[in-house]
Image (tube, rainbow, N blue to C red; front, side, top):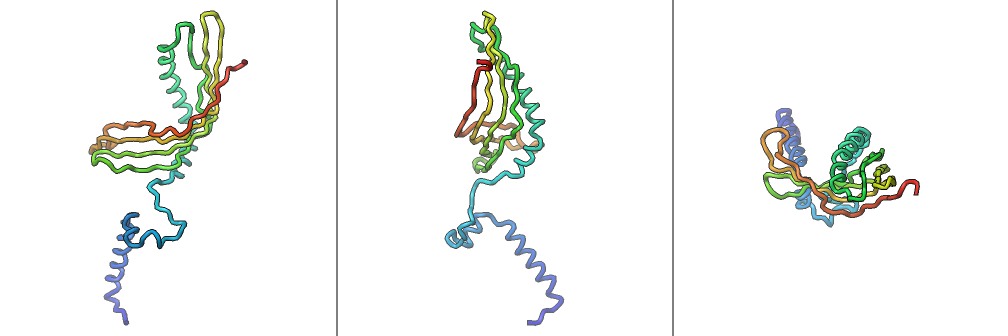
Length: 194
């Protein structure tokens, strides 16, 4: 078959349209074209996506997040501790509060299709923190009892709901978050000097 130069733009347009159609394909579309039994064993269709890029950036900014979050948590939790302080204690304050130098790692994210006016994300997180939290407990008898919480290990699934979606930046009205599944929580608790 002899190609005419006049047909080259038409062929290029058809190729571009075909490539664009493949780019718009979803996982479901590819499963319709080729059933799962014909894929090699190393091809896995998962609803969960990996977050390597987020973990790399979180590691870079973690020293700043640690400092800001540690201060924020300390100033917001201390009044609650004071409010629920047992009557036998004179004070209940943090003498040290740091989340540590190890950033949490997100191991996966999935988007849950639900309502049209919201977006629901589930983030799987693993965190083996080298945190150091010292709670300074003082009694009316003058006894000081510093208690340290360290080596926090946590694995869980956080659910974020962005609702309602709006036409103005940041494009949602509120964010609700919850701990959907607590898989594991581990920490070391010790009395300093005892």
